[in-house]
Image 1 (spheres, chains in turn purple, yellow):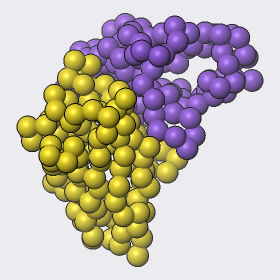
Image 2 (image 1 turned 90 degrees about the horizontal axis):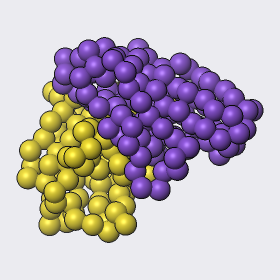
Image 3 (image 1 turned 120 degrees about the vertical axis):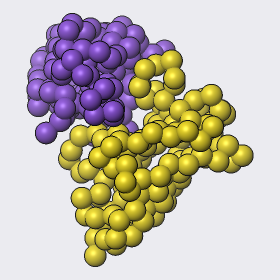
Amino acid sequence: QSVLTQPPSVSAAPGQKVTISCSGSSSNIGNSYVSWYQQVPGTAPKLLIYDNNKRPSGIPDRFSGSKSGTSATLGITGLQTGDEADYYCGTWDNSLSAVVFGGGTWLTVL
Amino acid sequence: QVQLQESGPGQLKPSETLSLTCTVSGGSISSYYWTWIRQPPGKGLEWIGYIYNTGSADYNPSLKSRVTISVDTSKNQFSLNLNSMTPADTAVYYCARLPAAMHFTFDIWGQGTMVTVSS
């Protein structure tokens, strides 16, 4: 059971938009910054979003992040088949004194 | 560009100690935090701990009693020791960089190394 809650899977058609939610509490998302990672099967996670809504160099603006209260959302527009992957949210938890992650969401681009 | 590479044994027996090393190339190990994260087969990510180049470290409380992370700035490497291994510790182990200004964000990852614990 992960500290942060994500839907197990989402799907959308190529070219469409999808959002992935990450729900937490006041001890984590509510009082810390959220990061998002993309993991293609068999490879290491890749940073997509940090500090809630910032993109590292090289990440296209099709990827966006937002946070409201104790929840965060990753948005992906203009879906491509190459976006099929697991997506994880992560943040610091003050109560656990640890970095915590969501359980991951598998994105299918139909 | 900075690259990370994990190295160490892929197979261990229960009760043995895991020792992994992460070599940082293309940049200095100084001025950053460095971390270990693991992922059991088919499961999510678990943060193990981090270390600064000064040697100051912090660990996940769930693993703290069994974990030691150390750094060797002369070799541009940092290491993970995890003792009393059990089959539940079977996972892909990743090393990653943790920039202080990015609030517990891991911006560069190694490719990961699979560690299997079995008798």
